Length: 156
Image (cartoon, rainbow, N blue to C red; front, side, top):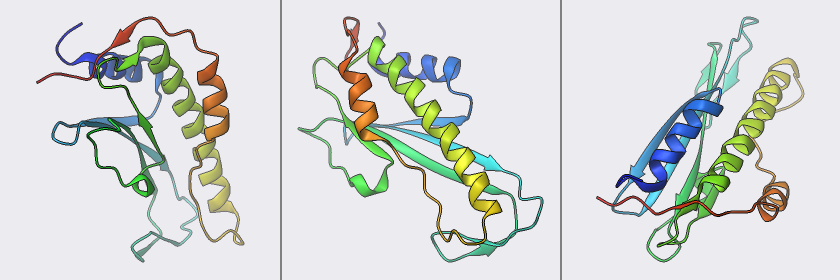
């Protein structure tokens, strides 16, 4: 594999299997990789929404969320800033099998989040929207993986 290790595999798998807009950001100094994705919903009814900064709008909704892969020995992470933070082993990195599972799980999570966002727009009584990550379901699926094809953290 190239010097970009699991970044190459993650990017290729996201391109092939993740149906939403996304961006991968490599924070070399922090030994972390962020995967941000965007959900977009047309607000044709002109429902007023207020973002987390207190700005009100009736425009279409663009909701961005991110996950983080990090080195537990070297990275500094504010877990509350991410949907989920996933540690990787420094030398081992991430496996192709895990990356494929992660992308599938993230796509399902984003799909459910998009459905929830549309429901949120149609429900006057719900005051807040957030995407949720089912950590228990994720770990159960991860435990069933047979990992063999590992890609190290990228080198630069």
